[in-house]
Image (cartoon, rainbow, N blue to C red; front, side, top):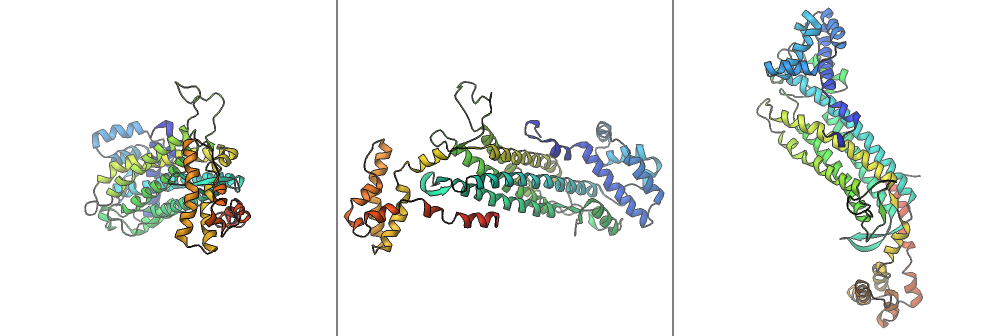
Length: 441
């Protein structure tokens, strides 16, 4: 985790203090269940809670013990015993280290998912606000980066909103799938511990018992979780890439907010660079980079091995912290995005009406011209306008060329042609699109 791209609430989930506190709670809840079953004295369970609950676990002390015993959970249990005293012999009865590690990871990933879902809500709120602000603001739609047909900037943002609705739903599903508990002992058979202990711990921690945990929770769950983070990160990048393109000097339809005193370049004082969205593109790459190792963790040996362990100690905090930062930054970028409707209109008009070519072609087919003939007629009147634009020359507009084409005017009189250059029909279904995305408003 790099502090530059970290937020405190998410970082805290992965702190040593949080981890050891969760480990303790797992052990203490298990002790409660064991006491109820008569396996250990109820007084021991009470002592574990009282003395362990009041303890301030010393990460440095645990690390020092681990250097000798070469086992992190044993090191923790040894340290816990320093607080609990003789009743510590009843801690970890019938359990294995994976019961603690995997259940703890489930708690941490669940908490991380809660923050990521809240982050998505911020992105959704920002997108909704700006989508309605620019619901009917005309802009050019582009395919292959080339001017295609008119759309509205609000429709662009509504599309992103729909995507982040799906992102949020995926995170909710991932949270549900990852939130399982394993207190099943060696090789997962409950040979030395009652399944009711697992049920008790799961309920106490807001988890579900893992149906079959071998000795570890199956890693397909984790693979699905990190894959979801990768997809959400890709959605972040899609919005960021759109903004980066719109901020290009030749386009300049929107740009990141540039604060007073901000500097864009160490060498060129005039620069206003899309640094935040470029940063988001890079962060998205990093989150996706953690997906492949998570997939490779699925195939463990037999009932368990620890080849997954080193991977997860890195990717779990890094992926969640990075995505949390990225989503929060994206919400802020959208909220403060500077939009230039006049420039959008100027770019829309750049090709002298060529963006209406499909409407003219379709109207010609409705008037009786074969589609291939209609396509050729429109194209031959469009290409000179394109060529003049590319050469920086002025000349007849697309509409002028059409009015001078006898094959066209034979079927479409001048007044009819002029009506085909109105933007209004392109936007007649914007309300329908918004209703699909946002519901009835």
